[in-house]
Structure formats: structure tokens, C-alpha cells
Image (cartoon, rainbow, N blue to C red):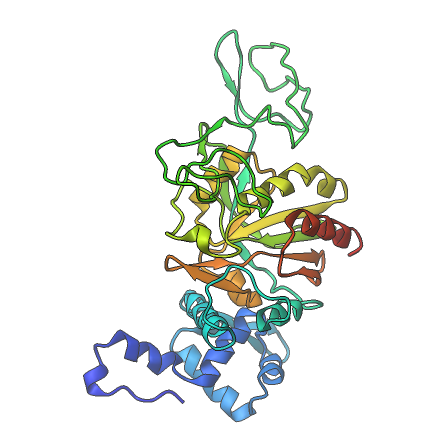
Length: 382
């Protein structure tokens, strides 16, 4: 069990945290609950722990507000252990420990946004095959909505079209307006995006073969800097698995502006190219939608950053924010730290409607080929 605090440590927050979580079994119990193993027997099997020790540690974590007990069965009543807000707030600590060990204990100390195919990180990700995602697992999400249309005769603005795109029933002026485009790859309804000439990362708009976006004014590769002229995105909360035949969940480090990327970002192998990846998924989205396959992008960027990017690029699928690292903790996803920010390494998971992971692509070394592979795997998943 955790040690009692010494009097001289009473005002030390590190010591206070260690008194609650500074125990091997307590850390591993929280790790397993984030992964969706909430019941006593499940935890017993996953951890290989004695019933006595598990009972003691669970009682300790409940008493300190890390876990709470919730009934899942009546007659007899049985309980499962659920993370509180305080418990979920430990997810970044778990991922920080994992990232440190991946780099300094299991790796050679190199900072990289990719992983060797035979690395421990790759083995951990591919071990997800056939496992279930916790249910539910909701994250903040950005969803693009069509821009308002403006009547040229009276300047009136209208909301997005009804389910019948040719209908004028909800329009007050009675004018006959052409239907909006239904081609998600069309640029007709996208707001204009401009390159910010004042940004040190502004690019010439070309795309490199390694997935990087353009060449900046200093001659270094970088992501395109975009400024949305119209805010089109709304933030909500979504389950990471959609109500569809299958969900393709692709994780990536980050897209380009509005927020400046960390210093030296372009020198981190594997960190560039996320704008290109989103664009290819965008342009091929109709193929996925035609087979009832949902696409979800996820990064640790804030929702407001994702919203600006989604609006500027016309992204037709949700972008989920794992800024609190709940998904990373639930799946033990590989990360890397750049500019004191933890970022996902690029990977793709294909999840069926029953939340079972059916296909894993990691590391992602060829983005277009990986997207084609994900589409084929999703089509075969049901």
C-alpha cells in the first residue's frame, strides 16, 4: 500500500500524489480501468494479482476519489469500477510514463514521430487487433457544417439545406435557388484559405513526396499555413466509433496553423504530413461513405485549432480532440513529445460496428497506400 505522508511532506503536492498513486498496483489498476476493464474478475485476470491485494487497492482508490463503484447487476447486486473526473485526469500521467519508457527504456532516446516495424511500440499497437474499444468513449469533436447561402436579391441568409437539397420550402423569399453541391470533394462551398505571409512557416503551397507541405521562406519543409475566411465548424461530443458498417480511425500528430507548431517540429521524423493525410481522406471520403464506412480523424490538438483547419480545408468527417489523452490511455497509443506537447504517432485502426478492432496499420510509412488499405479492410470487416 501507499506510504503514510511524513509531516514535512504535508504541503508537497508530489508527495500527496505519491501517497495516492505511488504504488505499482494502483497505477496498473488505473491503466486497466482506462482500457475498459472495470469489473473485479476482469481486473483479476488482466493483472494476475491476488484477490486480497486487489480488494485493498480498489478500496484505497475509491476512498481517494480516483474510482467510484457503479452497479451493473441486481439480484445479487454487483459493482464495476469507473474512473471519476479525478481518475481520468491521471491519463496524461500514464501516457507521459509510457512515452518516457518508449523513448528511454525501450528505445535509444531518439525523438521521432514514427516507430520501427519491429519495435515494442509496434507490437503493442498490433496487439490491439481483435480487442474491444471501451464503450462508450466520447471525445470533443469538430464537425463541419455547410456555409450559409445568401440570396442575391435581398441579402437574406439561409441555414443549411433541408434533407431535400432542391427544396425551397423553408426559404422566405420564394426565390428558386440552385441546390448546393453534393460532391464532398468539390471546392465550391469551401471558404477561401490564404497563406499568412507573416508566418515563419508560410509555404509555397507545394507538396513533398514525404507528405510534408511545401517549402517555407527559410527553405525548410513545413505544413501549409491556412486562415479560414468563414467559421463553418461546430464542436460537439462524439463516440470514437460511429454508427456505421465500420469506422476508420486515423491518429496523427497535428495539422498546420493556426497555432504555431513547436520549434524544430519539421526536424522530428514522422511529424510532418498531417495536412496532406487529411486532404487525401477528404478527397476519398465519398468512397468510404458509399460503403457506409465512417472516417474519424483524431489528434491531441485543441478543438478550436481543429475547427479552423476543418473549415479552411472543407473536411467532411469529424475531427476528434484527444487533448486529455483519454483515447491514448484507453488504447495505450504511441506518442512523442515535442515542444512539451504530447502528440499521437500516425496510425490507422479499422473498427467494426461491435467496437472490435479488425485491422491495424502502424507505422504508417506510405499515406496514400495506407488509406487504400484501410478502405479495403473496412469493406471486408463486416
